[in-house]
Length: 244
Image (cartoon, rainbow, N blue to C red; front, top):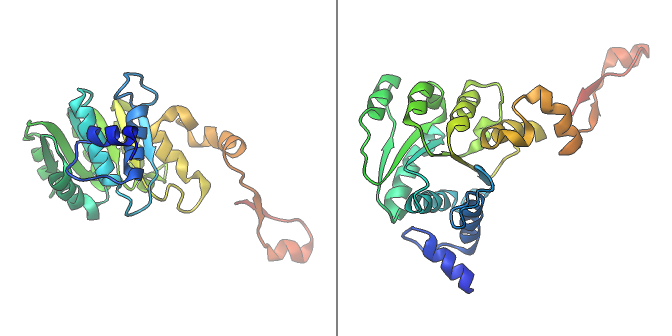
């Protein structure tokens, strides 16, 4: 183990011995956020780590370290409904810093009530599912999270969906954003647009259609795919093409 690796491990406020790839991911995020040197490189960072590689524990370490350095006091975690409990369990198991975590549950009215009665001990963490986040947009904007963590962020791939638009709005206000996914592209290359619109709108812009040509020209090769058109082929009147 190198001296640098040992130093990174000491800086990770977690009750576990991290793997090397987790140390590198932690160091990468902290560097982008300017945690150690005060030089902010980006307000948005993506950890594109495959399932089972420990994205959650790395994120807990990043959030805890930023709290210890006085950069964040409030964190919002947005995740699929099925894994909200995982965040609660992982924070309880691994966080080696004071925190108060609340998982928003029940009806929208119940969730609003929970947001009005948050504990204020250590790092304040609110965990909510994607489907509820956009419905609670006004209340979550008032919560004013310093750091938003979007877990399984490929859920944001549909740029026009309400949950994506809601996260874009919340992300525009947050000081820092952390995007987690192992499948940034699930169906097509343009799946990345909405995710990176949340992360950093300066990368691809804020307009999907306004950025489409630039995305195709500068980042992806999207060849035309020939679509069989029996009528056109039978009559010889032309060939139909469709964007691939």
